[in-house]
Length: 509
Image (tube, rainbow, N blue to C red):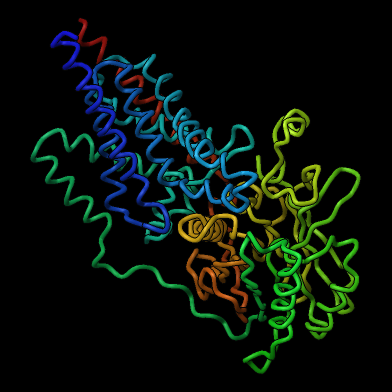
């Protein structure tokens, strides 16, 4: 190898290492780390590395490896479901993480590659254009192939005072905001003086010395809802010896005397907490009704029909009868169903959450349940559905949101807390409270500004009697959705490209 080739290989290796480092740092703004300053520095470092490269292939290398590290760190919990039944699925875990991380990074790489095709080398607007291209890639990632809007860059703002942006600009606007700030920091960092200014900006944006937002105090005039957290680990949840134990836990908590003078007007069990198929659960439903003393109970259940298995929520009346049901409509790929199902079934590959066999069938779409006077209309989100912001706008605005989930699949570190953060984001975007019943936690009552009023810790067995917060007036985002953020993104993207091309033409003349 010649000295020049050796130097080139060393340069590529150094670039790749730095790209991996800044990508990993950028992910540390996600829950449960919530390290906003380090995340901003990571995103700024990513854009700085890409900004300073003159060759398109080098820019794309930075974007791909940074993206792979970012998604690898942010989504490392993706291996947890494969470890529940290691004998059947454990071999898939490393492949799942590698494929997910690199696949998500490809979204970034493809969109940046498309922009570089029309942007002259050395364009002064490159930082702005790279930031907008990455935002556009995140919009696509949230939509294509059923969508996966998890770990957006904008999500690093959820546990900060900047969550107040959500009702105005929504999740894509928050991502655009984060990446534009990072682009400014990257441009400033081109000089020592600018790097010092950028450092002060990071501290100022974080502002750790200022008090953060606090939850609104509960309104004692509002109706009380009880949230049940039976704490069934996923590897034992469907064990025949343990199923009666978990069911009895939920029964005992349902029957517990209220601490306040008035008892709950609704009791909520988490996702898939009924131990039998709904259509064959007369005895269990009667036991639930007796324990509740006639109070309606919303219970997560499963059923089966001609189309396949159903993951659903059922509202039970005072005698255990089914008053209403909502079927999960957005299923988890590779969890509740397998794409190209007939082919994969022939190879012996089935969904991780498919305990009935044959895969789950999707419901018709988002729906509300009328819970009665005082409680009003609640929109039910079952597990995965809470990560998608668009569904609330597809129905008449409800009075509140209810999230039934089984986060035992996600392990005990980051996955459950990121899922909780997304429920907080849904509340803030819509100005609607969210009541969240999670099998192993975190069960919580979230006020309409996205702040947690009360919660049960991850891995805790217990219940919460909580006053249902009142909704705020409809937010700008609830009226317009993502269109204003997408329009701003398009204008910035077009403006940055035009400015870069005009500057390129001026240089040639």
